[in-house]
Amino acid sequence: MTSNDLEAALGNAEDAFQRTPENPEVGLEYVTDPAVLQLRKACRLLDAAGFLLARNGHFTVIIESSFVAVERSIQFYVEEKGYDVAAQRHTEVYELGVRAGLFSDEIADRLERLWLENRSESYYRTGIAGEYRAETIYRLAETLHAEVVQLTRTRDCLCEGER
Image 1 (cartoon, helix red, strand yellow):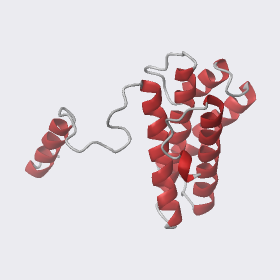
Image 2 (cartoon, helix red, strand yellow):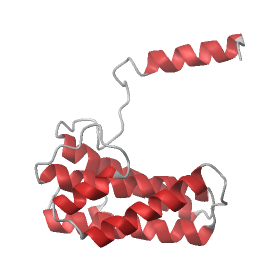
Image 3 (spheres, helix red, strand yellow):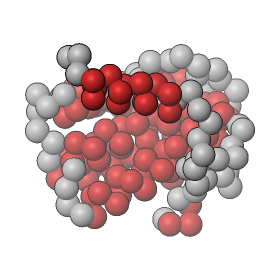
Image 4 (tube, helix red, strand yellow):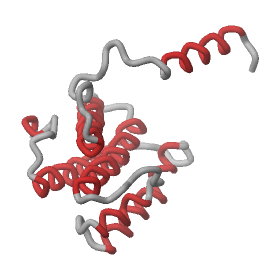
């Protein structure tokens, strides 16, 4: 691919990520604490997934957003407990959850298997995303997020008032 349109679009995207956002996402714009940023990203992902779920569609996006919301919620918890999560891969966050005392090895293994066996299948379209799958992973993400918020007693959750 060497079209002028593609090159221009790529250049614009590269430039956009080098600039400070002119209109930053509400709720994330003044966050300086890396842990709180992860929590609030989870809030936004859950909000978007819930919005799409209510409209009965885009199940692949709901599944992907829900898996990432699980990761961000765990990441918030472990960072709050003083663990370094920089440069960790998707499934490593589950082991950090165990080390930080969030859940057992068994739960971490099940979460990791769920991610390994199902997230990429839905995402890369070797499996078909469906409503029931989207609903259940969304409920899992929502439940885990709510428990993390309750355990940490944080007041930084953007979706707390919506629950």
